[in-house]
View 1 (cartoon, one colour):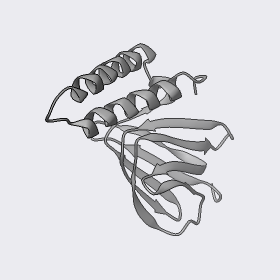
View 2: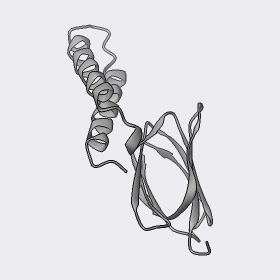
View 3: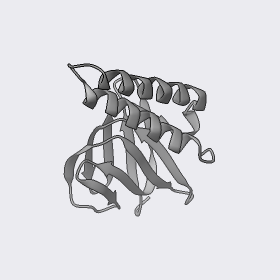
Length: 139
């Protein structure tokens, strides 16, 4: 275990990941970052995207997150996400429905005076990322 770190991905509802990893890469709001054991401690905000990590067997694993915060310590990365799903848990049909709803909402918002583009765009981005990740081979 000496060269590995612990990765925990937690949402308000559940613990999504709690396991050892060789390396963790996450979508920070200022850019993607990677963490190996012994990393200098830091905290950052996260944007919607994919956390990629290599498990102890060397396999790449992926988790979709919808924003949140990350804390990196020399031996642990903790992610507090608004929502998260492992790649293997993404329901493609549900993700397609969410994409359709988000695209429709974007069209509707364009015709209003009190436009909430940010919320609609966030939903669209989230749906696209889930589909992109969920459409890859299951892990």
